[in-house]
Every structure is written in structure tokens, then in C-alpha cells.
Image (tube, rainbow, N blue to C red; front, side, top):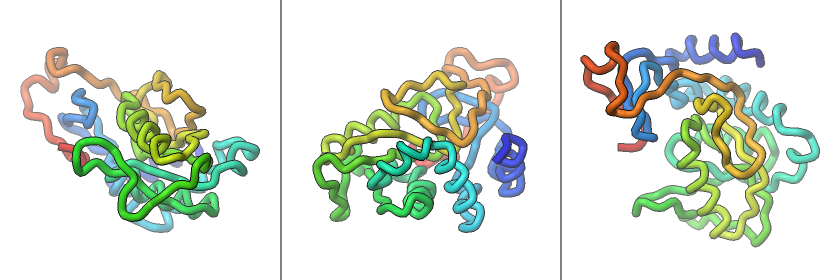
Length: 192
């Protein structure tokens, strides 16, 4: 998929929002990518996952034995990546504040895992998910995402394959530009 085709998918799903948003990272932005809306259509979610899978080199793709994603945002794309790759998909969640593999999910020691997210901004959630996967016995060999908002700067310590890189500016709370400083931020994501 080309960048224009990907953005057209976001727009058709009304998933590219404009306003004043507080991101999971604690930073502010005038743009928010609501991947849940993008992925709510099963056919579109399947197309997106197949396009991401095609970005992963064939030899690496053939090693992946499971997909694990952080809940909530990574659930749908993680599931669709499992389907695209023909492997099981599961998720880590953090009801106590720290990611953990629960619900009877288990990884055999050394299972080669693709960690899959919806949107990556700073990489914090991804690194936390990777740590939980490794503690559960998995060997995280690659990561993927629908969107890399870091401008290519994120380092997860493993090969990273986003479908698209979008570099919408983000701001620390004390660095807001005038167009954002006069309005209250909304938080449409999954983390409070």
C-alpha cells in the first residue's frame, strides 16, 4: 500500500482526527490516529495486516511463531497479523499497571514472537510489552505497527516494521504552541 492509499483508509474510516489531544505518552498533538476506527472493518483490518506482513523480510517472517500485542490498542491488529502470518495471536495486558501474559496465554521457551502495536510514539509501551513477552519465555525477533509517529526515531532494540511513518508534531505540556494552549486536550486513546 502506498502512503496515499494508507491515509485514504484512515480518512474513509474517519480515523484521522484533528483538534487538541493528549497522547498515551503524555505529549500533546493536534492530530490523533484512532486505529480502532481504522480496524473496526474486518476487511480493512485484514488488508492493513497483510500490507504490514509484506514489509517484514520473508526470511524473518518465516521464523515468527506467535504474535503478541499490548492491550488495548494492539488487540485487533495483533489478531489480524496472526491471521496474515498463520500463527497464534495473544496479548499482554496491565490490570495492575505492568504488562503480563494472562488469560491462560503461554509461550513455550524460545518461541519466536512478533510484538505488534497499533501506534508507536515514544516506544515505551512497546518496550514494556517486549519485556513482559521475554519474561514469559518468548524471544521477540521483530516488532510491527500500523503507524510510527516517532519520525523513525524509536528504538525498540529489534527490527521494527511500521506500515507508515507519520511525523505529526507532538509537544510536552509546557511547550504547547498557541493553537493548542488555548484549548483543553481530549484523550481518545485506551489509557487514562
